[in-house]
Image (cartoon, rainbow, N blue to C red):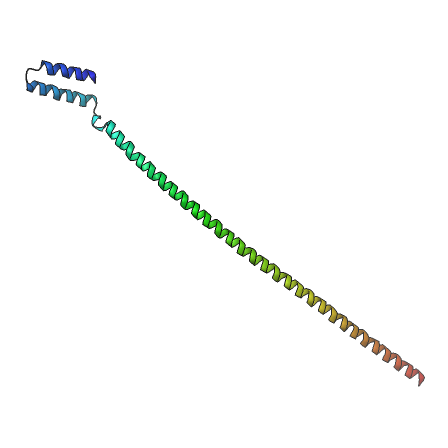
Length: 148
């Protein structure tokens, strides 16, 4: 670029009037546009600074949003853990109640079993007594028949 500037400087010094100076300036701009066709698209230091500032602000906003989401996640996680503990406690209570009920039913079954065993023994004794009475009656009849 310094060659173009030097060439323009020489033309401006050699120009005899304003018209030639204007033509030299226009030619220099044309030469710059030919050499650097994307010159309009080139970012300036100010453009870069503004873009950097905008990006920094956006990054900070994203950081804040990320932190907010992390806090929300922690809150949800904490609430879920509390809910899980509550559910576990309630389930444990229900399990304990069920175990107590099972033990009560087992005790009732045992009691019924004992009562049935007692009744079975009573009936067995009654049947044995009845059989004994029948045998005695038969023997008595047999003796009576033999002695009459």
